[in-house]
Length: 380
Image 1 (cartoon, rainbow, N blue to C red):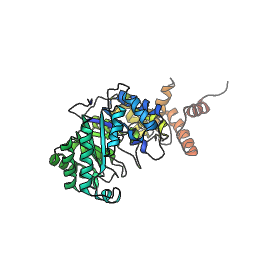
Image 2 (cartoon, rainbow, N blue to C red):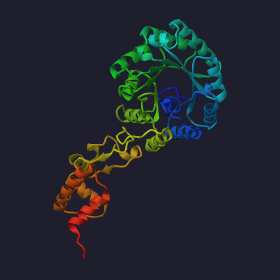
Image 3 (tube, one colour):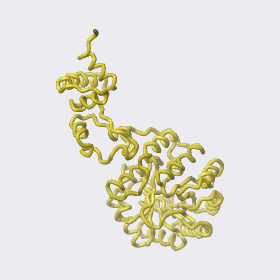
Image 4 (cartoon, one colour):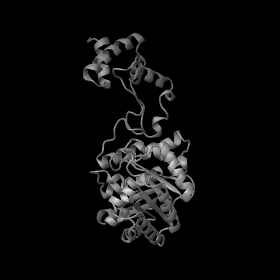
């Protein structure tokens, strides 16, 4: 039996499948198992663990994950092929995804077949899967370029064959939120199916499109840690969860304090940099240099912070550099247990700005202390 609840939003993490399909990314089995544990611990409800039919290390990793006793449902990804589904059965997965293209460009140029043949393959695979699994996701690849009438027929036939939901895939990331909302709403109303959003970030709108789909009625959201995924990646798990909580007022009760830990681990395992400017978990998320901003933040963090840094495992940083103000200088010296006057702060700031311009960066704490020492401390 699948472990998914029957109401409320469900986060489906595919870091171990779509995330690993990022060009050049390979997780070791140990890393895949550790990531699965961490995803489960932060609150992910379903983990797409990989592609069982690949066999070898992939098969062994998925088998191990299935035996961990996690709270999360473990899903295997499959083509609409019986041997794929048999491999998912052998792994011990409690749910399966069955994926096939639905756009005419894919049907003609990728599959070299017809719409009718796609329906036949999907239905046969779904009916077979239903004999072995209570929970089935039928993935409509390239749904965002599919004819809507055909997509409704596809989703309807999937439901009749035993699918629990249809994954709406914006495979090449061409949607924007307004179109996403209309198309997903139409699909749900006409096909009477549960929908999962699976959005890619080619135009930088994966998270926005995922949220638009949720507003249209989708109850499942496919994500990856750090937005890993093919080309520009997928909707980032940490962005979706925090946006749902703070923008949509929908708290999924995730242990968000571990998001930075999780993101840093996946970054190292994938060999992909976690940029300082990364939304939610980047080190610059709560770094303030601008004098006006830093001064306001010191008075009341809500002026420039939408949530507390501790909520995701970060800390606030007052950065001293070219754009700093005297309030930041005085605050920095308070960290050292030292009070300085307004005049001292002004004088130190002049030297700080000059050094920041010369070095083209913000200053290290020791450099600020050296400036103070040069100005106000003399050898005895």
